[in-house]
Amino acid sequence: MNLSAGCGFDYIKGLVETLTPMGRKRLYDISFLTERGRIEMEYDRQEDLKEMAANPDKVVSIISRFRDISATLENLAAGAVLDDVELFEIKSFAIWNEKLRERLGDCPGWMRLLDLSTVIDLLDPEKTGLESFYISDLFDGSLPELRRKIAQCQRSDDPHDRERAADLLEMNARVESKVRARLSKELEGFSDTLSLSLNRVGDIDLTLAKAILNERLKLARPSIVEDAFSFEGLFNPEVASVLSEKNKEFQSYSLSLRRLALVIGGNMTGKSLFLRTLALAQTMFQHGFFVPAKEASLTPYDRIVYYSGDHQSFENGLSSFAGEVEFLKEAVGIVSRGERGLFLFDEIGKNTNPLEGPAFLLAAMEYLGRGNGCRAVFSSHYEEALENREIQMLMVRGLDHEKLAGRERRDISFYIDHTVQEIDEFCGFPREGTVIARLLGMDDDFLKLVEKHLWRKE
Image (tube, rainbow, N blue to C red):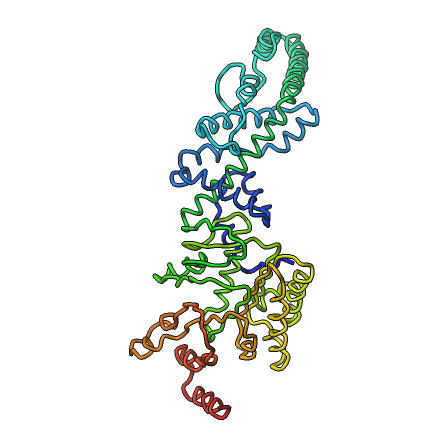
């Protein structure tokens, strides 16, 4: 089970423009990092390439020329005789390795490529500097005369010369086979060096792509602080991009969350987006990405459990409530095992009946709050959630009534303030459903019936 699926991390990975098969494979296999040192190392590497990321054209034209020669290197390490295509791949790689090594100059050790000029000399005796490979006359002293005789016989009209040409071609093939065997044997000693350079090219490619993404999206390197979860100017890149296309701006979040927090607010005010953005930032952080914020202080966890509703249950073929239970089981297991966990639950308990739903929410808040080194953030419409007096209460401001007082008819998003702020006292859940429905064009007679039933409840 992918416990942070649906937070938008796939969208972020889709923006990472790697240039080589090795870089793409590293992106596909990217690891979830739980140790501070590993995350800091990824960040330091991106800082190493920050200047290059601001002007990438100098290296992009070189990096994009590398091919994945891992299969050829496996054959080489196994002692196989390489064919002309494989020898071409090694020669091409060595040539571009030297070009990139020269372009990088004096660089940090993690990206320092090894000298492969000897490999080039071995495969390019004519010193052409070209990627193409063929068995030239310089590889064996017998080849020039042998090939001269072949050409002479092939031009002759004498049937005997044509028969002789076939024999000479067979001799030429045997000599070429010996050359390939000799080259393969000599190259075998460079197998580890070639593999190390191949891996470093992949590392450079992915790290540069991440550094370029930092510039493009204005991502920030977070501070890694024990038991911290705070942001200044946190935003969601995917949603911000959509809004930008409509000439709108994403309303960022700036706040610090305690170990147990509850987010409340009216429908369509952005509680779910807030939790999703928190999950995305933590997921990016623990995969070695900078985060979408001006500033952030974060701590790594062993696991992230993000439950965002029906789409995750649907993907797993479960009912909505069964999906909630599956994710709760994962979170409870993390607490019971004494692991560090970040839990983000959007409207837990909403998919069962009104009596049991609040009970599941309260139990989740109480149980998950026990975990040392754990943090839990919930969103809910249940007023019962406020029974937990130790919880940090956050509220999305919601409808801006000053804007509503205006006569101008605008898109509904114009009237909603998505600011998330901490509140000291709870004054009741916002009842903005009828106002929002009216803004969405709902029939006024129908809404009067809704209001009549609300008055009866009060």
